[in-house]
Image (cartoon, rainbow, N blue to C red; front, side, top):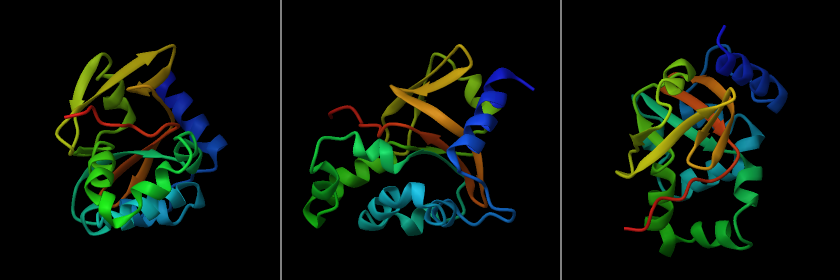
Length: 162
C-alpha cells in the first residue's frame, strides 16, 4: 500500500470520519457526520444540496467544522446570509472537482493545478506522504459516496479574486 493511502486511511480512522456501508450521496454522507455540520449548513444556504445529491460523479474537498472555525470571526454567519449567496456558491464550488478522483489519482496530480467546478484551479502538492490542496492539508481520503468521493481538509479553500 502506498504511503499516502496508508496515511490517509490512518487519518480517516483517527478523525472519526467513517464511510457508511452503503453510502448515500455526498450530501447524505456529510449530513450523517457532525464534523461537517457547518459545511452542510453552507451547502443548504447556497442551494447546492440538490446539485451535490445529483448523479455526479464529484470529488469534494470537504472542510470540517474546525476548518470553518479558522476563518475570521463572523465570516461564516455573513456568508450564510441570503445577500451573500453568490459568494458562498463561489467558495463551495471551489471545493468541488468534476469526476471521482480517488487518493491514488490525487497523488499523481502532485504539482498540478486542477480545475474546480467554480472554474478556478486548486494546486495539489504531495510531500513527505502528505497531500495539500492549496494550503489545506488533506486529513482523510476516499470517504465513499454513491455519487463521488470526499477528501477531508483542515482549511476552507478561498477562490482567487476575479
